[in-house]
Every structure is written in C-alpha cells, then in structure tokens.
Image 1 (cartoon, one colour):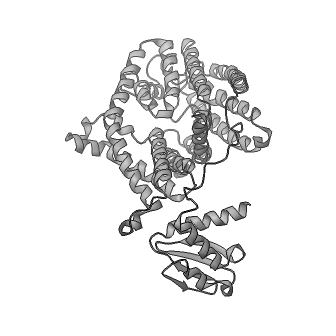
Image 2: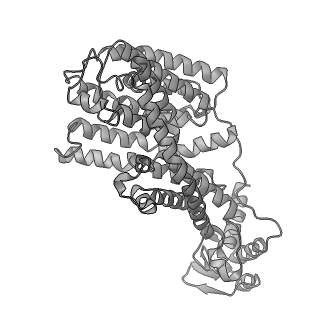
Image 3: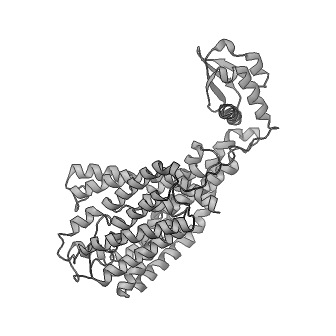
Length: 484
C-alpha cells in the first residue's frame, strides 16, 4: 500500500511542479489589481489569466499526470485516457447535465455538482485510466476489431469505467457534500473552537476536494457568515469578522515554508538538489500568494500521517488567532499579497500579531516535521525508496509479435542501422542509416504484407492493424539492448 501511495505521490510531482510559477503570476496580477481581478488593468489581466490557465485547471493536470505516472509504461495513450476519463465524469455530473437527468431547472440542482471539477476527481480519473491502461493496453481483439486493439482500447475502456464511476458519484457526491455543509453550519456557533475545527477539516478535506463545502459556509453567504465579503466591505464586528481567514496566514506564509525546509534537510544527500528546487518553488508560492498545493501534494500521499499533523496545526492556528481577535482577510489566498492589502481595511484587528504568530508556527512546523520524518522514517520527497519500476509490458517469449519484431528488426539492420522506429495505423515508419544494409527478403519472411521505401533513409514496413504490438516489441528490443 505504501509503495502504491509513494508512486501516486511521485506521479503528482509532474503537474505539481508547474503550480508555483502559475501561482506567482496570479499573485503579481492580483497585486496590481486586487479588486477587479484584471478588469481594471490589462497588465493585471495578462498575469492573472496566464496563471489561472494552470491553477484553474489543476484537476485536469492531475488527471493527466496521475494516469501517466501510474501506468506501467509512460505512454501518451495513458495520459490521453486520464483526460478522457475526467471529461466524461465532469460532463455527466455538471449542473446542466444533472438538471436534464433529474428533469428540474438548473437552479434546483444540488450545489455539489457545481464543484465536481476538483482535484479529487482528477486523481480518481487518472487512477482509473492507469488501471485501464495496465489491463487493456496489450489486449488483442479479433481481426475484425483489431483496429481498436491495444492502446486504442484504453480510452474506450476508461470511458466505460468512468460511466460507472459517474453513476456512483451521482448518488454519493451530493450526500457527502451536503452533509459537510450541514456540519459547517453546526460548528459555526462555537466561536474560536469552531474556527479551529473549520481550519482542521479545511486542510483534511483538500485531498478529496470537499473543502469547498466548508468554505462555502464560512467564507460566503450560505449560512449568513460571509466572512470574506464582510471583511473587504469592512462590515461586521472588529476582531470577529475575518476570524475564519486570519489563522491561515501563519500557516501559509510561515508554517508550510518551514515544513519545506524540514523536508529538504531530511532528504537523502543525493536527492537534495532536486528536492531543493521543488521545496523552494513551493515555499515561495505559499508565502507570496498562499497557494499551498505544490507543498501539500508533495507529502499528503507519501506521508499521510504528516498531513494529518499539518491539518491539526492549521486548526490550532485558527483557534489562536480567533481567541486573541487578530484578524486579516484575503480575496485570493492567505499569502503576503493579501496580507499586505488587508492592512488598509479598517475592520482588520491587530493584523501584525499574525506575523508574530507566524514566526512561532514556523519553528513549530520545522521541528515537528523534522522530528516526525526522522522518527517514523516518513517517505517525504527525497527520502522515497529507490524501487524498480514495474515491468514495461506483458509480452512473453511465445508471443507471435515478439518473433515478428525480432525478424523485422534484424532485417532492418538492427541497432547498427536503425535510427528511429515509429508507427501509424498499419505501418512501421523506420529511419535507417544505410538502405543498402536493409534485407527486404528477411523482413518479408516475418509474414508481413509488404514494404515501401519512401526515401533515401526511410522505409515503411506494412504490418496491418496489429502494428502497435510489433512496434512495442521492437521498442523492447531496442531499449533492452541500449540498457545492457
């Protein structure tokens, strides 16, 4: 199980790596135009939209990245299937589609379906797509259907699997989402303790994308709190309005960057350079903009215990800020940009004390993270086991395509003559160094329909609709020889 979670965590590193740069772009744009979100400044709009192109589509990136990383071979058809799976479920469970399925006006559709395009759905789509790739990418259908064999079958099966997943989510998602909204309303009357519980569950629910349900209760006008709107309008009660935002600043600006430093210090020496780049980028994004996903997704799956501790510390931070009535607010997230902008809001109460609290939380996060990582040998970035990747295919020595590929490759001149091999629907497209070395008679002895020379160094071997399997075997032959 831990090996599986480690592989999932590694798969997320590809899409996560691009998030810090996108977050900083949005932060710069929001700094330029903090009220209009680009409406009042073309320069701000440029930065905000550039960063938003990535941040707003994080779920899509996760669907593609997880599918690619969890597949047995890093193949484009797995990534495409992840995207297909995500599009299927988010289209079927969109508010407009659900309204048609339930035969009701879209206004009456459960609010949960308006939040279906989240990171959790992206991860689920990627995992299902990877499972379909690992199961079906080498399946050989009867000749009449051979065009749909192998990798072409993967997105089809992914679509079918996501249809089944959509049926389950159709009933489960709104119940869970609505239950969390009701829970949020219930704890909203508990004062500072309620703020702490909200902070704890806000972080804890991020991996499954359900934090939006709680956010809607406390930040917006679902239950009459509207903490963000009232703060920026400077309406409400000084020291109270903003209590569901203030405690995030010490965590996002100080706590998580300190945790990043702890993860760097505990990484293996050989991997510290790589970890340093990831941690520094994530820490800058967290401090400057309040976008914490690059850091949180770096350890939430590989060290879930550590993520629970992070959620507890976040809850404690919100409780402390609420108890002492230190308030500040954000329109984007709890980073330096929003903290600086919130200083001019009259209803902000002793906001500078949040910086003092932040310094204390930086120390707590660093020492707690470092102690737990080393004490329990948690597999944070740079500490993961150097296990071998799973097998690259399900071919066997008796596979007829193995024999075909061996004969064809030998006829092409082998490693000494073959530059590259690709394939289309029915043909191998091969680039060779010297056409004189190619033995057409040898190639034809593999039982292929024909050969076509299309240039001085390019030859096409006509195999048929099962060409993918021959191409895969040739790749295995080439890769094996190059490795050995």
